[in-house]
Every structure is written in structure tokens, then in C-alpha cells.
Image 1 (cartoon, rainbow, N blue to C red):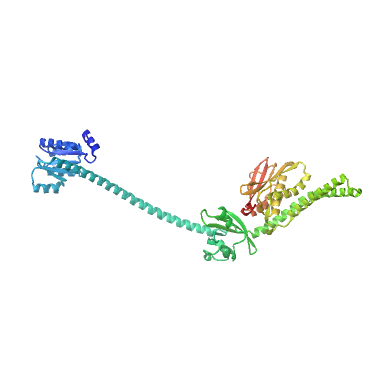
Image 2: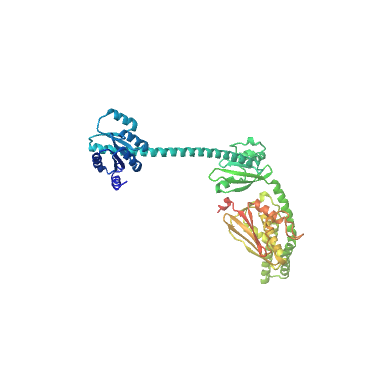
Length: 526
């Protein structure tokens, strides 16, 4: 487009474009150009139809004005060719006679946009040309919109087809996943149930859960409380961990006693939901076996400690006897007598504490013995008993780091004291040539307390670490260990909801840490 046309386009976006004039009279072409110059269109001319067609191929006009009568090819034939080559170009017929037949022929053959009669009105001519350009722009835009619409429709159709295919695939996958989940859920030997927290209603359960209730899986209710379905109780089970799990948003464990059997129940809440997955494990036989093993190991430990304890008791008793003899010789009370009486009192108290600790350790453990207790006090009682064994090992140092004011934990202090003694005994046996240091400490870490036994012994080889808690596994020579100590200790800690952590370095020593949870209700007590 020439400079003149570009300027017109900048002024009036509608009145811009390429215009072709075809007339065999030069003066008419000049007159039309002069009139249309105000529109600032890009105008080219031709003096006959053949020249006009050549210009058409090169110029690609948007509007064509042709005279009706021209030598050779007339205006109707010319505009018909224009229609074939440039279908969207708007065609205007310029005629000097009112030939009705010619007009009808022009309309039928070349679909003329407008007719302009000679002589013309300048304003009418400009408006007609302007309208032709507007019509061209409208047709062009309609064609563009039609193409865009067709493309979008085709794309939308393809998207719909893809979406339907994806939905069908996702539906098949979900159905398969649901079926696989149901089969996996029912194949688990551990009783599982999805329970609604606010009313303990069973929403879903597996086959093992139904077997505990002695019913078929088809009889699993949707709104009956779990304690009623499983045990025929009208109230929630004592020790149920579900309320605590829902309150904290984390998994919780508890022990339920029903019908002479013990069940370890674990509850795992759904995030942002009023439901939880509950698992039930019958530990009656395990607890009975554990108690038997604990008693066996306890008797072995008592046998090892008996000699040291007897020696420890004899010392203060000898002191009592000696000072009693001195008191019997003097009628009055001197300063020595007072000192003797003080020593007698200290020795008696010492004997009393040793005997009490021994009795606590030897007492048979029962479920009803579980209570809230001070972990540091429990560990200290175990250390008192262990010190008696160290009398014959002067090169072994026992260092205590017990923290005061720890939150109380819930459990059986007697069995946990046995864990402490077992770990101390293992640490002592790990010291080369009965020489080194044992450390015993307590503390708190987040929402749990801990006690730890550290030794400067030989450490544990990495290949043995995965098996140290297995029953009957030991690296000690025959006669020095049964392999049950750590296994029993692990079972005791697990029954208290605790965990073990073992840190060891060969040639440098080991550290056994036992973490115990702090019950929420005890944590909140003043």
C-alpha cells in the first residue's frame, strides 16, 4: 500500500484499502480519482478489462469499479472474472444508461454490490465506495470468525473426546483400585476398622475384625459403636486411644482388657475428618510369655546380684553391731556416742533403701500395678541395686545424670527398672577387662521422656545391629548370657508405648536410649 493509503488508514480505519478503477475513458478515470482522493485510498486504474485483470493479479484490490461498456470484454464479463479470482472483492458497476436487462444480467452473473450512474454525485460516489470497503471488511471478519469458530469447534470436539476417554480410563482405574483396596483390606490378618470418633460407630471393617466379634463380614454394621459390636459393652472401653488420637491428630495406642484377654488398640486419625483407622491386636498370649521370660531373666539377675547385695547389707549391719557394743560400755553419752548414733542411723537408712529397691525389683508385675511414676526415681532405684555389683570392680565408674522435675510417665516402674538393670549389665559386660565408665541419665525430648545408658566398651558390629533384639541372639561366650535380656527389654518398652534408639561405634562404646511417651492428661497436671 502506498504512502497515501497508509495516511488514510491512520485517519479512518474503515475508509482504507486498495481500489481498482477500470474504464476506457481516461477523463472518467481522472475524475473518479479526483473525487475519491479525499478518502485517501490506494487507487490504481486500467483502461480495459484485460489490463484490469492483469492489475487484479498483482494488486489484489478490495473494491473494483468497472464501466459497463468497454471494448472487448464488457463490464459484466470483467466483474464475473473478478468474482472468480477475488471472491471477497466488492464490485461496483458504473453505467451511463438505464439498461434493465444489462443490470439484471450483471446482478445474476457477477453479484454487483452497487450501481453508480453517469453522471454521478460525488458524495454518493464516496459513500458508495466507503460502504464497499466496510462490506469487504465485514466479509473478511466473518470469514475469519468462521474459520476460528470451525477450528475451535474441532479443537473442542477433540478435547471432549479426550476428556471422555480420560474419564472412562479414570473410572476403570478407580474401580480397579477400589477392588484391590477392598481385597487388601480383607486379606489383612490384623483386625482393622474405620471408626467415627464422635460416637465410635463402625463405618467399615475387614474380615479379621468380624472374626474377633464372631460374626460374618456381611453383618458388620454401619452405625453400631465398636465397643458394642466387638465386646457387647454399652460404654467405651477403658484405655481406648481414639479420643487421644483425635485430640492430638497423631496416632495413639492403648491397651484394652475384655473377657480375660488383652488387646493393644492403635488409632490413626484421618486428616481433617472425624474418622480414624483402628487396629486391634490380641496380645494375651504374648504378655503371658513375656511375663514368664521376665520372671526367668529376673531370677537370673537376682542370682547375680545376691552376693553383692549380701555384702552391701553386711557392712552397715557390722557397723550397727560395733557401735551398739560401744554404747553398752559407757553409762553417759559423749560426743563419740552421738557420732556413733548418727552413723547407726545412716547405715540403717542405707540398708532400708537397698532392701526396698530389691523388693520392688523382685515383685511380680501385674497390669493393675501400672501407675504414674517419676522416671528419674525409678532409674535411681535400679542404680542403687547395680552399685552393689560394682563393689568387686573398682575400675568401673558409674556416673549418674538424673534430671529432676520430669513429667511423670505411666507404666510399671518395676519392669522398667529391670530394663535399666539389663542395659547396665550389658554395658558392664561390654567393658574390656572390667575397666571403664558407665553413664546413666534421664531427660526430656519434646513430648517424651527418656533414660539412656552409655558405656565406653567395645561397641557393636554393624552386622549384629539388626539382630540385637531377637530372642536368644547373643555374642557373649557360653554361660555369660541367654540372649533374652535385650529381647525382653524391647518387649517391656514396646508395651509401655516406648521406643529404643541404639548408637554405637566399634571400639568406642554404645549408647542405648529408651524413649517413653508423656500422657497428655499427666502433662496437664499442675
